[in-house]
Image (cartoon, rainbow, N blue to C red; front, side):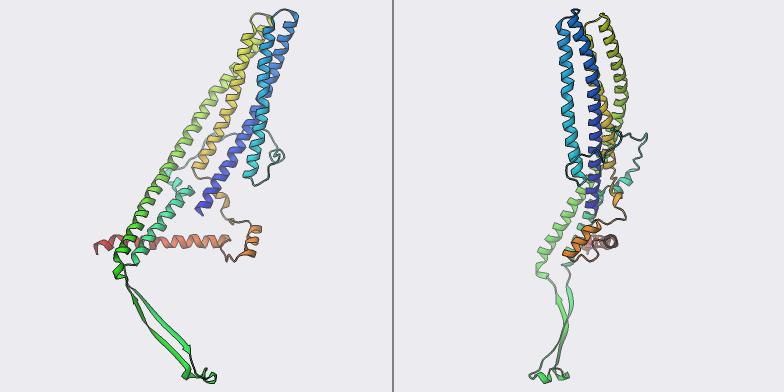
Length: 365
């Protein structure tokens, strides 16, 4: 169940990540097209001046070069958008198709909340499915130690048989034909103590290895949360500075175009300001997308998403019916059956603790 939850968390995070990438690419495409219009207007001015004999052909060539370079970005972004849509289709269990109907609405990057509650570290241990999975593996291996040590003790059993036997079929069902046998059985692998003790040591060593795996899983989870928080906060600060940078770049383009039309500056100034505007606008959009991507990474690091399946069956009803027609699953496919398994695992915790107490008592005895 923890494996299922872990996959579900990853799936939800990947859907959110690819959706954010798609919206980021769409905004970048919009920025590129807007800059094409600006540069087209500047090219027309430079070309008109060249034809009028007031400037050299250099200005017109530079304007055309910048315009075509920006236009070349459009097909690449459109291709990335299509590929991201295909990836999103696969994650949603759909064949590759146009998602415009499903993704109707403003093509903007999702907004993030002003504050994000991350909870306390103890909550992380309860929420992360991979930590819960590692803990259950540790508990299962703890039980294996007790199972291995059980071979050190003698085993008692009661055996018995009841049968009927007669030389003639007519006497088969008479009381005299009844035969029975019963008695105790005793087994003790006392000559194999070395092998049994070595098996106990193997199980104990596996348990120690799983302790290290569990600790490492917890440390990695904490590191992922801290890294996601740091990246999220850093991207937000970048957005603030880049927003101011884009505003200044827009103003610089307006002033450079005005001065060029009035003949007080050459086209190099216009070219530089327009190149800077394209770069800064694209960086702003990418960074705004990074804010959301880092928030998705934080959401995944905190173990969010598995709650979506609470109270629901692992397998859809129509799929359950197909599986039941092929194989007898008893109640394993239903929510009630899953809860029964969980309760059984929880009730075994005391038994596992008992094995632990016995484990430390046995060497002394």
